[in-house]
Image (tube, rainbow, N blue to C red; front, side, top):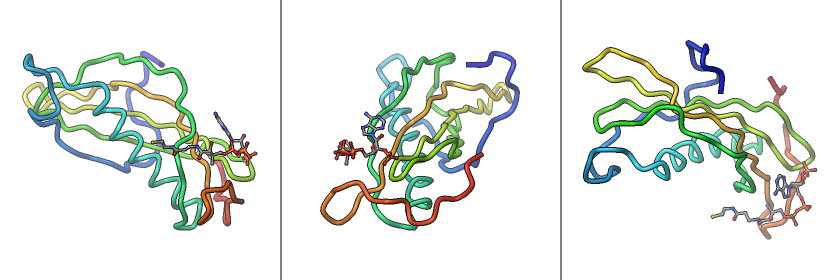
Length: 134
Ligand SMILES: CC(C)(COP(=O)(O)OP(=O)(O)OC[C@H]1O[C@@H](n2cnc3c(N)ncnc32)[C@H](O)[C@@H]1OP(=O)(O)O)[C@@H](O)C(=O)NCCC(=O)NCCS
């Protein structure tokens, strides 16, 4: 992760609020909840590239969390297609928080999620209309 990065890279796809139900008793948001938001964001981008068809998550690159997410933070996931093959799509996803009290934006984590477009039988199928990779 680039420590110097000051602004998100990619399209804003998911924005939500970190709630008490997403945290442990000390108020730290579960990493799995963050991953789930990122997977939703990447899945939506993948679906666009599969022209509205099905796309499944097949792998997630090793990820680390640089900053915590706290209850009440605004959580935003930014995503963009960086590479694709016949049926697979690599989508870079970044998660940023905004703390209203401190008026502070921070990058929490980023990673590359790979999705595969599948047909009605669950078999990989050609991306119908690949959009230009960034
Ligand atoms: C995704 C899935 C359909 C791929 O099936 P498969 O038989 O492995 O397909 P193939 O070997 O023909 O590969 C298809 C594409 O996936 C890519 N791929 C397969 N496994 C991959 C992996 N682990 N990481 C990255 N890409 C992978 C291949 O490179 C290929 O890409 P291309 O078409 O762009 O060249 C199958 O593995 C599957 O259904 N997995 C479960 C996905 C899922 O349910 N995710 C949610 C879990 S809750």
